[in-house]
Image (cartoon, rainbow, N blue to C red; front, side, top):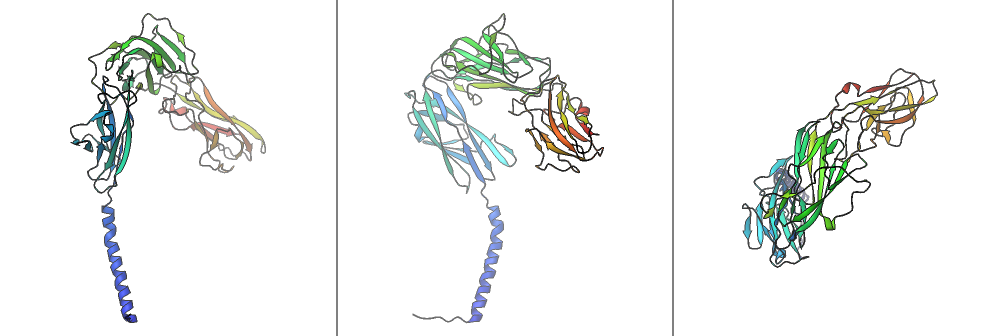
Length: 452
């Protein structure tokens, strides 16, 4: 073996050159790496259920999202649908045999740096596909230089009626005292007619629905009116049926903020149990609720129609006044005194958190300077986690207890305070936030809490 001798001077010079070259390469590569970030692309298509041959097509959204990617697109492999279903795509997509490629739709919108678009895909049962037939659809979202990610959706064929609710409406500027014709519209997306159906509607507190003799009415635990109607008739595949003139609904004085009137349709023979905890009664009425055919049968169900449930969303200004309830107590140094604080709703509007699933009536309580909290309600805790001191009392957050805050009612709690010294510096109570907006008399939203 031949040996090679390297002098110390050559070794030092070589290492110095290598370090400088490496540093220069790193310095040059860092900006390029930032510029070469490929971004990301994602797609989503849920599982699909179709009526068998004779049913209208179903339009299903394939959602494409992208941030920072070049030429975001999705490729769909239809091989797994053979004999089960067909899929049709908009004109901006490119078909290549059993593969389809769709770019980000031209109607895509950008928000906070993310581009989101919807590719409407129309599915139909393949000729001869029987009840229970299933197939799969593979789709891969990607962009230039991004990592491709393949997902799969299952397409199932079902024979029988398939009632869908067609209502998805938003109405702003609604005033107390208005009478609104709430739309009711259904379509049968199955391949078989539906004979008789059940319509279930829920009107949040403050809304007063009209009376029909083939409907039963009840009130749920958050004072919403629940209506269950038995509607007779034959509902053919693809045929839209609607309530002429709408379900007349009066906006009462308790109505406040966002209200969603939910509705659901079911074939009567397979309808589920009635809403629990509600006692239903018939009302005297001169008319029956009837759904009548409207327009020609649909060849394709629109993309906005997604299931048996739908609804109308109303935005109501309303009027209300939330009043902070403070306290004034007396005692000597060393005494422990109870202090009851909270909020009162003067009405007439009723803050209602059922649409969001929240409770209402939460508030903040800051004790007076010079006292120590020795006992507190279980639904109150220090805001920020620090209970504070007599010199610098913490602010306590007290959670709302109910989904609705009825007019004429109060939400109060009691704290036990030990008097360390009398300072004359009051505490305060005030609403947490201003739900659903600042009330009509904000001057009484803060009340003092004093110890003397």
